[in-house]
Every structure is written in structure tokens, then in C-alpha cells.
Length: 408
Image 1 (cartoon, rainbow, N blue to C red):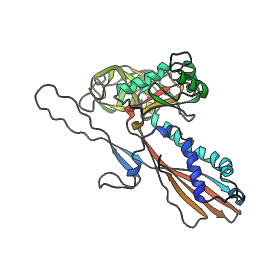
Image 2 (image 1 turned 135 degrees about the horizontal axis):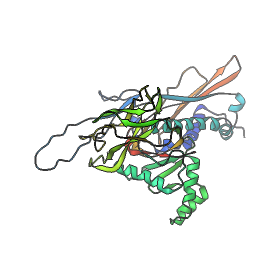
Image 3 (image 1 turned 30 degrees about the horizontal axis):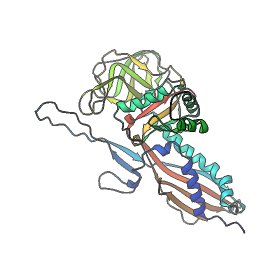
């Protein structure tokens, strides 16, 4: 029986299946906002951008006297603004292959690149927005306790324990923790599964996902003995001094530091956790010739009210401690709740006037892909392209924790 010639829909559906099954980090992101794109309620949602409202925060009144609280509406924006694709050419002979042969020879090698790009984009663009960090930069975790610490960080920020927490980490990180568990008391079936597959699977409150695309961060050059410069500072920047006196980048975007005497607070009770608050640097920070440096940070310094993030404003000359030695390479594993990171895909329009075009969406997981083929008469071949349109946003940074490592 002769081979059935491939149609555009057959190719697109096969590519979509390969793409969906190749995603790792993307499987653990919140997808509920996709249906809002292209809609408008008259105030917030329109076209390729959705404005996402964050939960309001309140504090508890003590005593019988009425005390009104201001309602502070906070929003973040999710935009579908990343169009990626792979381009190739196919021959008539290629199109005469069986679907299986065409997939193995042409689709799988290309579409795996797209899935890797999406995962890498999520991991690279999320860690720099997350202040919570466990582990030691430059050192691969060798015990389960580091990952349990990541869970404790999420607990400190009232992250739900509802089966939607995930850990995404690198190959060597996975190898070390699976090895660390081999002698522990545990469900024999669970240990056996980890032994057989070399993978963590589901354990200690997380779904574990190995992803070779986790990002390696380089800790900033630092220098000096940095101090807070000025008391009672608030907001999304911190004025500091006592850095090495030279114009140079001291902290890189993604660096994490603590301030002496400044503790994190439980977002519900607003009480101090007794743990030093961690701050992530949101843009490269350079010192001047006098050693002064203003650092853009997350979370903002807020010591009072419903939006309180710290136990008290930093004192003048409070010491700043950067997590990790200068210039250390550190792979950034991530633990997060599904609601922490939003991800959305959108359908691209099918063009007219081409040999083939098809757009398909996997309704179960919401992933969309387009395939287009057209004839290149100058070179007597068919040009083809696969395209994906997506966007992501860290919606709840406090419900994510970085896991510092050495090699991935």
C-alpha cells in the first residue's frame, strides 16, 4: 500500500504533540489566563495583553474600635510578545514519507528546539524576579534538606500546600539528590521507582522535573564592606555606600542579599518570621568613585501597613551581605507553586497564498502551533516554518524559591 501524502494538518498536529511532550518547566505554570487574550471587559484586557489583579492584603484589627483600611489594588501585566520558530526546507520526497519517518527526520529535531527555548525563557526570566533563595552558590546540593528548605521558604510566605508545587532542577542536581535518598527510610515502591528511572518523580510535597535549560547565574563582583546609607529607607531602591571606590558593577541583576536587622514577615499575620529578609537585585548596580551605590530591589522596603514586607526599615550603616562569593557561577534550580508563574500561548493567523498552512491548538493544555509551507521557484524547493507565540510573567514571586547550585 502506498504511503499517504502528508497534509498540513497532519504535520501540525504531529509537531504540536512533540512540542507539548518536550516541555518541562512550562508544564508547571499557570495557564488560566489564556482565555482572556483578545477579549476586553472595557477596563483591563485587550489584544495581546492581560492585566492580572493580585489579591488585596489586609491586617487584623485588635479591640472594639472600628479602624478602616485602605484598599490597595495591585496589578501585574502578562503579554503574549514572544514569537519563536524554526525554518527549514522540505522536498517532495520528504512529503512522501510516512508520518513516523517525517516526524523522526524533520519534525522532532526542530520542534525540540522550540520546547527547549520556551523552558529556557521561563527559567531565565523568572529567577531574576525571585528573592527567596536556599543553598550555596557554587555548591551542588548533596542532601534532601536543601530542597526541604525551599519548601519551608514557600511555607513562610503562606504558599498553599495543595499538590501544585514543583521543583525544576538540572541533571547533576537530580543525580545528587536521588543518590542522597538511596539509604533513607521511605516507601519502597517510591525508592524503587527513583532507582529504576534515575528521576525524583513526586516526593516531599513537590513534583520534580529535570530540565537541562536551568540558567547559570554569575554573582556580581562586589567589593568593600557595603552598608546602608541613610535610615528609614522605603521603596524599591536602597541607597548604600562603603563599596570599593571605583566605577564598576558591584551587583548583577539576580543577585540576592540580606540587610542586618531586617527580617521577612508572614504575609497574613505581618509578624516577623525571625529570618532575614532576602532581596533580589532587579538591575545591575554600579558604584561611583566614592563607593556609593543605589540598588534597585524586590521586594520593596515596606515596614508598615497592609503591604508590609519587612519587620522594620533598615538602620543607617546596617551591614549588607550578598549571598555567594564574588563571580561565583551558580545554576539556578527553582521551586514554585503553579500560581507563581503565568504562561500563555496564542494562535497565529494562517496566511493565504501559500502551498500549505495550518494552525492547531491542543485544547487540553492550551499550546498552539502554526505550520506554513510555500514554493521557492528560484531554488526549486519548498520552504517551511513552524511558529509559536507565547508570553510569561512571574505573578507571585513570593511563591517561588531559587535553589542555588554549582553545575546544573
